[in-house]
Amino acid sequence: MKLAILSCSPKCYSTRRLREASEQRGHKVKVLNTLRFAIDLRQGEPDLYFRQKQLTHYDAVLPRIGASITYFGTAVLRQFEQMDVFCANSSGGVSNSRDKLRSLQILSRHQIGIPETTFVRDKKDVLPAIDRVGGAPVIIKLLEGTQGIGVLLAESVKSAEAIIELLQSQRQNVLIQKFVAESKGRDIRAFVVGDQVVAAMRRVAQGQEFRSNVHRGGQTEPVILDETYSETAVRAAQIMGLRVAGVDMLEGKDGPQIMEINSSPGLEGIERCTQLDIAGAIVDFIAAQVDFPEIDLRQRLTVSRGYGVTEIHIPESSDYIGKSIKESGLREKDINVLTLHRGTTVIPNPRSDRQLESGDRLLCFGKLELMRELIPPKTRRKRRPKVKDLPDLPVAEEVLSDTAATDAD
Image (cartoon, rainbow, N blue to C red):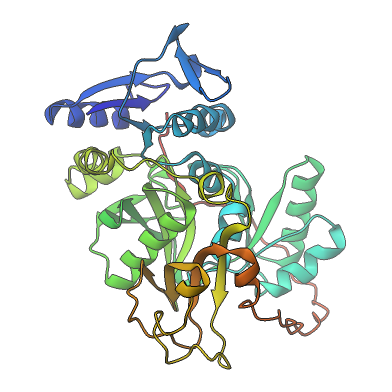
């Protein structure tokens, strides 16, 4: 396998370890500076140039794209995708994970624990938003920020209001998030590769420091995750479109709470903590998956006139309940079931004798006109009760916090 590592910092720990692991396994590997690419676009012939020369063939790409070059970095990665080169992380996945609001929006439609979060712009909406997430104390988080920068803990409603007003005056977009008190300055970093957690560590803030980041002096300890935490981390990474990810979770009273998903997680802290060869696990995964590059369904499936992809829900009143997929007659209607979602379980390419149950969601490809008949009318959502007036609370100090840790290159 010929592997390209996209990195602006060839000497940083993560890049060095990934290169070493590739060479130890007999692969050809080169570290390519992400900013030295040129993207050439012609009809039917997407191409890349590196240092003014046409790029030679690569079997796979491992992106290590820093936050400061996300736009250009994902553009380069997207070009590799159009050239049918396997990318360890998709351009869409990297873009999704870099925007805290977007990533939580994507996760919110799934049965995955996340802290209650709200996003507002109007000053009049701040107090009702704080109330909706459970009242003070609250976390106030900038949409972009790493290594403990850009996240504050406001102990009172008044201090939260003042912080938000200040940040918005500087044209900063902020999230208001429920404070998970039971986490007690601790979080878990699960390192996901493919469909499994290859390593995990618990990070614990020290002294009066609220942030558990290793960069902020947080102490680490290896941890073996139970099935719930492992499954949550893997599902969150997959939903985000990432094959290699660092998933940060709080230990909430109701189970894992996803805080952040990092598309370029640092290797140094977790490898030294767990003494595991995580770089090797990443390279082995890429070598095993190199023949299966990312396929954009919108480009491949929706070009057939009258055909497309949609999700069909099976309500309690459906005649399909108790019938198998074969007995439902979907295939006779030129409708193929790609995936069956049942609760938190995902069943890819379900067998024809699989019986359907109430609440099932079927991801289908077929004739849109026929599938339209199977989509039930949308029901109106119940409105939440009105927010009550909030009492004034004493102002307390704000403390910086965050759970993100990365040494993206």
